[in-house]
Image (cartoon, rainbow, N blue to C red; front, side):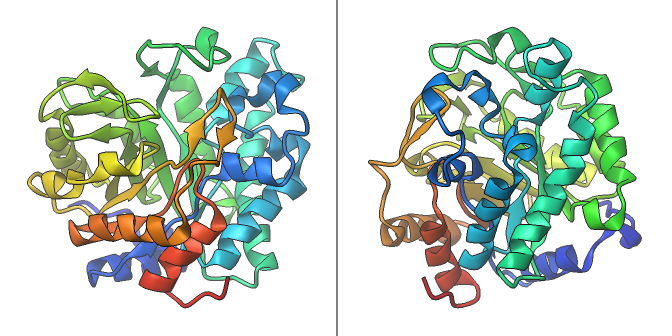
Length: 340
């Protein structure tokens, strides 16, 4: 399988890759947008029109809150900390349309700042060994639908190629302190019938290792609560095979309920030898906010994750609703001991 240029592989990523090659487990962080709620951002969600960015505006408005969230997951022992840039494309689109009080050209600096904020949070936790994953996507709802948080049943569409090219070039040419150790495409959905992925190739060409994650289960896409949306048979499996040929470094599923992940690793293993992983949501979606009242305990969450590890998952963590104590439970099982 093609490999990124050796000069782009950071020491932090080399440690992850070595653990994966040896059959070990890598632990991701948890839900950043939902944890931001727990540190008081946004201050008044009921009137916060901009929260369709899932808290990514905190990169601009509340960087100390963002640092605190990263510190919590670093202290919990996560091997990989994500930037909170999943909603960056929404910031770019909304500022260009005059929907946010930001200049249209502000988002590239926010992208680079996001890496610095992760590293600062890790440093405050006394961690210099974490890998920073730049979280992004190449597809989303149309810009007109961003603020329609509930009830929208349309399909994702490709993001503007100019935006993606600018982002890829930005990451490729970032100074070392603001360059991520890997790129993580999150909550991807539809897969083209021809299994061609020029959007992913843009990011592979940066030389930075690329992980790809879909909100999918066996046979099709799902919604945030696990409801089936599109059934397309073995297309995800065939795409997994194509990703391996292209040089994608790992394949994951995320932001779907834990029970929807059961069996997915075994099924995907029939198509690819890539490292596989999963990081689900827990709790309940409340229109760009999150309800933790139905969360499993850390022990319950860890027991569910153990099912996927038995089925072949090597990268585990959490999405919306998964808190630092859940990640600490995974770390105590699969990585360094953590006192919580």
